[in-house]
Length: 225
Length: 252
Image 1 (cartoon, rainbow over the protein chains, first blue to last red):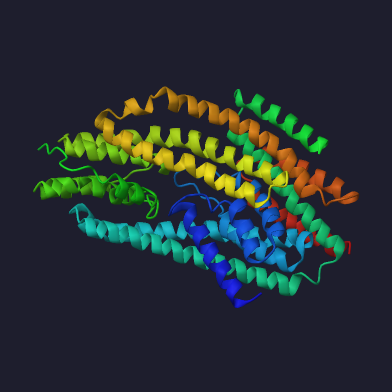
Image 2 (tube, rainbow over the protein chains, first blue to last red):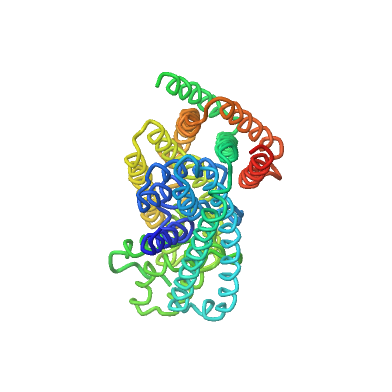
């Protein structure tokens, strides 16, 4: 992988990480978007789409309410696609999921760290804020966004580093059966997480009937194709 | 002191800043600083009117604790800014902001996080599973953000239009209906998407691996459902991947 592509992935992962919470929340942070674009940068849209779909299912579990902590799957998907691409398509699905889930956990921890740093910065600026100094207010806000950009870049770099390690030390050493088992674990867990996450959103109310009708329709379409 | 707005309010600048409302999210004021930054352009009229003290006091109030759904923060920004211009007593402005946190959070969570977002994402998943590829992703971005930007713009304008009587905007029948319909539509669309995605991701598995995939998905579902207070998706995924690596090593 060339340095140009690596820097491109780093920039894309940073934008994706910024979009999650800070700016502009237009959902490029969704794995379904982050993955295919990373795949296109690597000339491998198929791997990007597949891992995008896989991590989108994991994303269904996340409800970003208040101060709740959750994994960050955007930069994680970028790193996962980078790991899977070099391991040749389907063979790299499990490897990509492994790199992506670890990166996602690290992303979640980093969000908490940045929020704590923001809290400290706000406490330090209490006096000018309580004096109504709009310039301090705007500077504080801009610095926090910059902090989040650095955080997103660090998480993406960590993920890309993990992908490099996985490609170098794991890709060639796992047997074909081992690769299939990894793929089974990745896809099976994603389907389980996606279904449970959706059921939590749907709840036990009247929407559950609509969900059941959807599943029946989906099975019919899948069977007919 | 009441100071009626002299110029057209800076909605554009305020809206742009609202896109960054969570940029300085912290455990003390949560979205407060971002709210203050977004409200500030709407308060400049107070300074222009020669009322610097009122402007600074309004900026202070604007940056106090706030937490709601980010797409609906504009409603509180617009309402609070309008109240400041209308000369509403400071304690009433503070009460208005506090009172809006719960309803805006609850409405936004149901309408966007549990409605519009999974609905449009589910449509994109269906599109990818049916072979539309990048067109499905582009469609998702356009469709989702059409609703997203419209909601932010409506919220800011409605907040400014209603001021302290902003609750009227929240009781709009269209909003209530959209919340109910988006929940039902989301449930149906994601229901359709799941089997199609299972086929898309599982299509390459044959023989014993297909049986193993079904067993892992069913077992994972049972574990997540049974231990939902403790077991998260990322933990389940990592545990299963570790188990698979170990099994692959034992059974080369």
